[in-house]
Length: 377
Length: 100
Image (cartoon, rainbow over all chains, first blue to last red; front, side, top):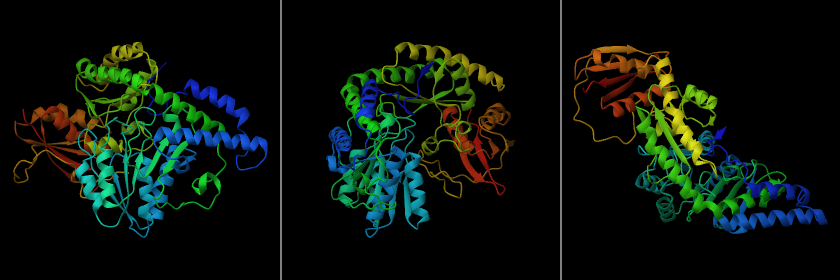
């Protein structure tokens, strides 16, 4: 089986596996207690925090660990809105944010707040000027922008958004889930969120960093853990493994990123040549190294995934028939590109060139068979 | 989730618009109500050549994917997406002009 779905989750990095096994023995005790084993767990936790902080460009006391990237976003969005309630009740976010951002926005709307969604162009890139104008409107409490899109790989104009937010005096939440460990974390954020399993750490660890001076109030019941930002007992072994994976991954990022970008570049170029009526979506240049997404006309996304699975390829799709809802991906809708017959290929660290070659070899026949089964000539 | 305007108009940034023409009666209606994508697109592709050049085909569809996919198909195939009108019973009548 060729695993080409790294954007859903990256296989555990070997460095994370080693760190996890060691920390299960050394870091199981309650880091909030005062005896020896507890102090050792606390030391491991704080060392992991310092390491993650350094790699994302934060201070250690700005970083909290959550139970997932989704929880980091929920707490980041709702906590900043709560802390800024007196400044205003407007939330600005791009149309292609991760569903965790948009769902937090729905909670805010139900609570009487206002949400302004900023659209994207055909490549999925946010219009920086429209974003700046939305942020500058009075009463804006928080703006949210991802570093890069999780479905099509397009990089977002985070630096422009950070500058506009700074000028307007509005905090900017940057969701770095898809790029952390692969590309340097851009500066200029007020709140940063990320997810360890996307960079090769274990599942169950998210990162929430809140810049010193940004007003933040927990939307959840009071709890002592993680500087009162995140409720519940920390999973110290998983956090230690997450930090080890981020360190290892960041050290490899440049060389591996170049290699993966060349492979996704080849898929971008070859698929439209090998398969008729295909649209490759996302920005051809301003993109993540490991993601490439395309849509095949007259093909059902689910059939495509099933056939690729049978041929030994794990990929994902934003087509409606493959989602838990009956709606197609909100990202593809916002871009105005084909939503059916959609395939996202995302390459994990160390993927072999051979897997990419075989994918390109089997795809044309699979698409042809599905089309002919639907009566398309 | 990202939502469309309730009036069903596409509010995304579009290419510069052609000068407004009076609303046109479709030369052909393709009824794809109840059909899931990509079937509505396949039906449109099969039948668009049945109307004269420059005439309009109306695709009736209620799969949410069709709202995005019919205009995207027009762009890929160099036909013109004229407009999408919401239907009272749900779904849309999506008007496409045959360009070649």
